[in-house]
Image (cartoon, rainbow, N blue to C red; front, top):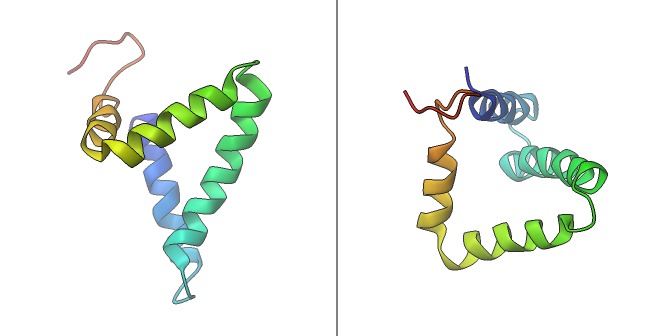
Amino acid sequence: MTPLEKVETLYDELVAWYGEGQDREIRAASKLLMIALLKLKEYGGFGWQGLLEEYVLILKNDPERYREMLESHRGEGKSGMNP
């Protein structure tokens, strides 16, 4: 399982944990986002905000490109070689 697949599995587990609660998908996504933002700030250096803004703009203005970026990380090993 790739790291991206593991994150998606965790998201699914969080959604299930919220049961039939209101906005359970949004709440699960917000938990992951909170952790990701903390890690970006902690390890991203001086330009972490710019990187975040760049991804948000791509998602907002070109969702297909963003989806392709995510898909390019599926199944990719540490060697950088695609299966």
